[in-house]
Length: 107
Image (cartoon, rainbow, N blue to C red):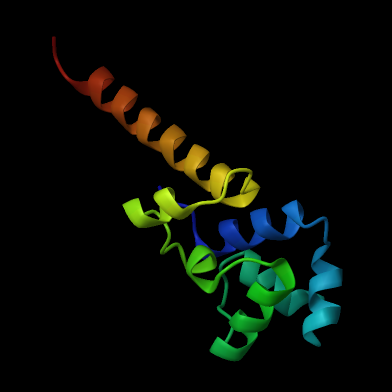
């Protein structure tokens, strides 16, 4: 299963060393509302999304999951911890799917 918006948001926040409360305060929203973003219970409006990206020093494309193209990988800065973490998780899920497929294939 692909990483969700909430997964990507939580990874970016943790990499920045912030709490949900820190984010909610900076965005002038309740902690419950912010937790809902990370829990994929609801999505921020476009203005809030842009503010979140600015606070976390990431692109909105990264938060929205639109960054796994070849051009993203080629342009990813060395040491981009968030991008590297997301790519690592994507490869782990791909390997799990392949292992499951092989396990279910008759020999």
